[in-house]
Each structure stands twice: as C-alpha cells, then as structure tokens.
View 1 (cartoon, rainbow, N blue to C red):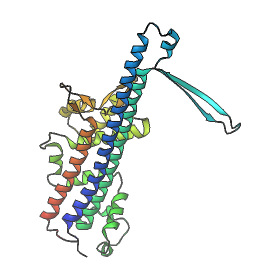
View 2: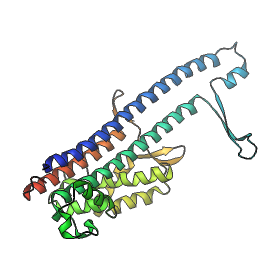
View 3: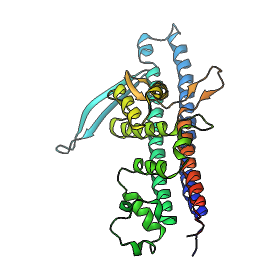
View 4: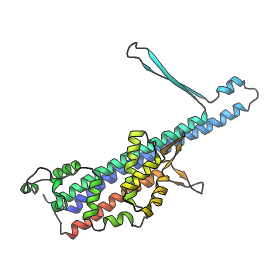
Length: 305
C-alpha cells in the first residue's frame, strides 16, 4: 500500500498537536480550579476580619479564627501504630500561598509532558524522514542491517531506529540543521521573533530541574550558562538569553524556581500566559520541523512510499 509522504508527516504533527491540546485543556482546568479556591479563601478572609473586628468575640476564638491545623503521620511497620512526623498550623494567607505554589508545580509538570511529547514527535518525524528517503539518515542510524534489507523495512522499523538514536532529540535537531537548507535560519529568524533553538534548549533543561529538583534551581547562574552554551549562541546573544530565562524564574518561599504562573499586565483585565507561551513555542518549533522536512523531501522528488 502506497503512503503519501505529506500525509505521513502531517499525521506525526497532528498526533503531537492532539497531545498539546490535552495539556492546554488541563491548564485551563487548573487555572479555573485555583481561581475558585482562591475566591473561596477571599470570602473566608472577609468573614475572619468581621469576626476579628467584633469586640464581643473572645480573644481566644480570634486567635484561632481561620487557621488550619493539620497533623501528619504514617503507620509504623513494626508496631502498626501511627508515627507522628509533624504538623502545620497555617493562616489564611499561607493557605492562599500554598494554592499558588501548587498551581505552579502543576504547570511545571504540564511543561514536562509537553517537552516529552515534543521529543516523541522529533523521533517519529525523523523516522518518517528515513522511511521516505533513506539517504537522509547517517549510516549509523540504521544499526546492524544489510543494505538490501533496508528497503524492506516498514515505518515502524524506522521509527524504532529513530528512538534508539544517541543523544536524541538534540542529535536529530542537529541533523535537521545540517540537512534542511532553511531550518537553522528559521529557528532564529522568523515572524514570531522567537529563538526556537534557545527556547527549546531552555525547556529541555527546565524538564531536568523539574523532574530531579522539584523545579528549584541549585545555582541559577550555572543553569543559565549551561543553556546558553548548549544553544550555541554568539556572545552578543547572551544578554538576550539571560533576559529570556529571567522571564520564567522567580522566588517562591525564598528559593529560585521555574515560575510559570500567569503574570498581570499593565491593564487589570489582561494577563501574560507564561506557560501558554512556552507551549506555543513547542508547537511552533514542531511546525517548523514538519514544514522544512516537507520542503526538503518535495525538492528531492519524494512522492509516495
């Protein structure tokens, strides 16, 4: 059965789109749920203030008014009895702060999922490239197989080989820069004025910090240096990179963290969708890859497989 290569490329992109649509939907749900919880706390705060201002209410009641006491424990495997490990006694403001921290953590994990979906997309579309035009691949990409057997392999085989490629997806993106004439240029010079190479490298490193350090930086300056180095930026672009990274970091509870919450703009009814902007970058980058690969294969006379 013949497969049109354009349909095959579009299928990989549409599968990726569907994953990001789901993540954007989750973002909306998280945003709405947090707003609802904070609204409830705001109403609770008003009631607390009313009680605290009432001279007829006992001071002891006012002292504990609106506070949450939570005890934490676990079952001892030796005695079967609960072992007490600590407690939290938090006021209404601390409760609100926890909701913001929790929302940020949820957003961080949506970004992790988005980047991992992007990795899968890069591998799948690289598999397409090898399946449609085996000459696009390096000899090492094929593994231990004879030349005469390559033509007999289906797309699934090429996809699996792409997954095995060392240092993926970075090595695959570098291959695209070498093989696709306009790819390296449009990465950094485009109508959105985004440096996709820099931003995807930042997101890749964000993923590592989120997964291994709970979204908290050890040494933020070293992190920035690492992203700049891996993005192969010129010295004059370093300041631009530092400003970009600063947009997605902030302090929470005295720690430098990856900060993805919405930011208020100069007008009270508008906000900057921090996570949404990063998801759009990932979508845009995938679109670049698909379009440039489509153009390359078309110019090389590829039609059906």
